[in-house]
Amino acid sequence: MGSRILVFLVVALTQVCTIPAVTNSGDDLELQIPLAFAIIPRVRESFLAYDLLSFDSIILVCKVESGTGRYFVKLRSGSSLHPQYMYIVLIPDAVNALNALKDSWENAPPTWAGADPCGSRWDGILCTDSRVTSITLASMRLKGTLSGDISSLSELQILDLSYNTELTGTLPATIGDLKKLTSLILVGCRFSGLIPDTIGSLPQLTYLSLNSNGFIGSIPPSLGNLDKLYWLDLADNRLTGTIPVSTETTPGLDLLVHTKHFHLGLNQLSGPIPPKLFSSGMKLIHVLLESNKLTGSIPSTLGLVKSLEVVRLDNNSLTGPVPTNINNLTRVTEMFLSNNGLNGSLPNLTGMNVLTYLDMSNNSFSPTDFPPWFSTLQSLTTLYGSLPPFPI
Image (cartoon, rainbow, N blue to C red; front, side):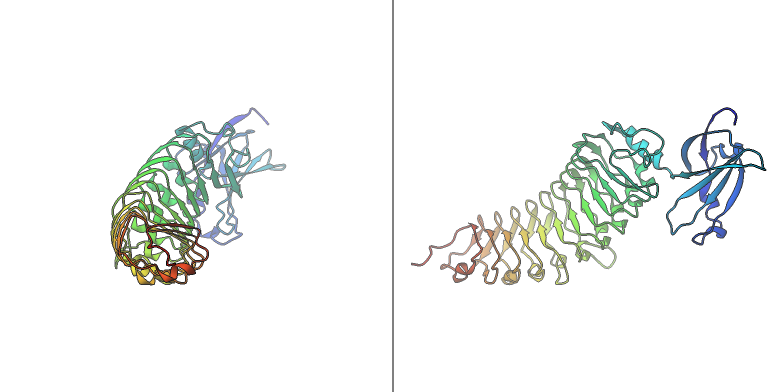
């Protein structure tokens, strides 16, 4: 077959595969390309390097299979009477993107070697149809930054780099190009800078966990576009500004009616809790706004979210009375209102029969007789706060 040659397949797949003849599922387009042409690096997309056996030509076959994005190259050698064929699958930019990550990290997994991250079983990498769909490298002692080249992994669904405390720098805005991403989990790293508003353009995102980093600036209103979001955790950062709600021209967190977790505590958020943030159609079970700089009163709209199970508003600068409809929250098991400036009468918690933990300490509630509703809280095991003596 002749001497072995190393050929970097650089094929203009973008141009070829957009020809109308191959837009329908199952259609093939075969183009015979001289081998010399295939190695000219003057086209748009680069792919894997292969060690080939002096093939006479390359036949490019574009398979359109329900949007899988797979491309097949058929290599031909031998005489025209007895051709020999070999098929290989091209993985667009996967190696380039993962090698860019590897180059930007120290302590990358030692298995990250070889030409094919899917076929070589790289640690933390999962593939479907030879496309990278998951990167899960939690607690791997990675050190470095997150390369913007990750946006080339267009099939990526899960990115989990949690608890790599030496991952630093900003998140690239190109992370918003990962349109199939369902989980972005970066808990316990040391990322900093602004949260990219392009995250709000990830239509499949269900888990967004950026807690315990060093992010600054405001919460991007664009997160309100994430209508499939289940879990929102931005806690334990240095976020400032107000909690964004929608306007006529911008989205906001009030639009996240299917989200079950709002974890925004341990930041520096300021201003009032917007009444518009809550509505009766929401499915929230956790509202955690503790340890911020929130002011004003607790909005009565909080009492509309009857799915709530845990409410944390402690360690803010909230004032005024507790809304009288707070006892609509009959599924709440834990409620933290301590260390604010709340005043007026103690809230009537009649009907909150599953409440086990209640902290109302360090407020300015008015002296009152022993509340009759207190004895109805049969599940209550922990109480912090001043109550008048129980009547004998």
